[in-house]
Image (cartoon, rainbow, N blue to C red; front, side, top):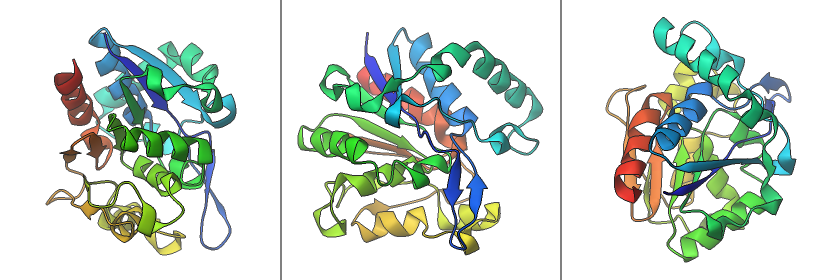
Amino acid sequence: MANVLMILSAADHWTLKDGSAHPTGFWAEEFVTPYEVFTDAGWSVTLATPGGRAPTVDQASLAEGAGDPATLEKVKASLERLAPVLNSPADLADMNHDEFDIVVYPGGHGPMEDLAVDKTSGTILAERMRADKPVALLCHAPAAVLAASDGPSTSPFAGYKMTGFSNIEEEQAGLAANAPWLLEDKLVELGADYSSASEPWSSHVVVDRNVYTGQNPQSSEELAQRIVADLG
């Protein structure tokens, strides 16, 4: 049985370029789907956030347009069932990542606010990269790799094939113009070999050595299943 450390953002907003606070958090499907794939495989999942604060679900991830109605109802039901888990996460600072087979970061815009600058999370990622231990980052969660080094020239992710929420998807979501920075741009800046699906909003998963990345919410299932296939 594998042990998973799932790290969620504790942010409830994303500070935009004009200084406004865009309500956000974690994207429901990106938490629920991997969590259930892992637990269905018999794996143990520990949830942690910065400060041990209860994470905020991005309400947009539960709204019409975030998925087909049947899927959304399933996600909502899962969130209700998993409320005790979400309401009492561990403090990330108390976690020994060496006890876990993989560290998994679901997305949503929340990581752009806190995990992108969180030193504890950055240290975990840097140490796992040095030890060649598996990490997985989904959608906007690759923003967390920015905290793994002091700058692009020293990033342990330089030279790795990666994906993440694309510029065109951010544009189509309506937030690119007011974004302080775009994830795709930052990944390229730090030296990652970035790629995206040929069609926006299509599932796209990239695996390079110990690094697993998924582009968007639609990649949640494929990413989780790939991790189970490789580490199960």
